[in-house]
Each structure stands twice: as structure tokens, then as C-alpha cells.
Length: 94
Image (cartoon, rainbow, N blue to C red; front, side):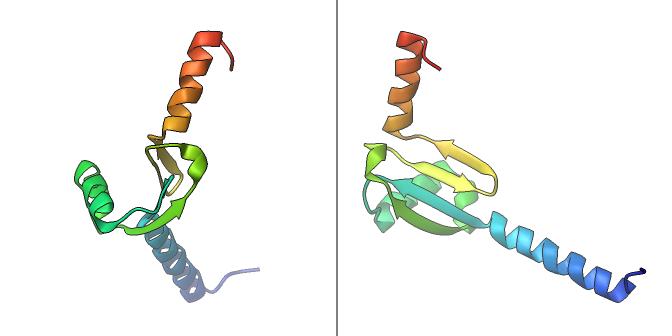
């Protein structure tokens, strides 16, 4: 079965646009509800966030810090992950 070239191009364009829009969406998770001032400080440290649509989430188990998720990447700057890393180094637990 041969695919109509116009339809194929339309599908490529649609998928490219979806990929670009999903890459501009960023989720920031913190143990408390972040205000505008908090988000501005994070954007100063991570300039790529200035052009992104930021969605905030709350996860009290993080204890402190935050996690940034964008595309298939994640930057974990939470106290929970730091404590887990410390525990692994001390006890050799994986």
C-alpha cells in the first residue's frame, strides 16, 4: 500500500510540531507550592526555562529542593535524592 505523499508530509509536520511543543513544556516539582519569585530564581539559574511553559507540582516527600522534568530529561535537586545518595555511599546500598 502506497501512502499519499501529501498525507505523509502532513503527518511529519504534525509530529514535528507535537515534539517541539512537548519539549517546551517543563514540570517543576517541589515540596511546597512555588510562587512567582521562586520560579524567577530558578529561571535565572536555568536560562532554557525562560521560553518554556512551566507547570508546577507539589510532592511533600521531596523534603526540600526541586525536580525539573523536560522532554525525557530530569534534573533532581531535591533533598530526598541527596539523602538517598548519602545513604548509598555510607551503607553501600544500591
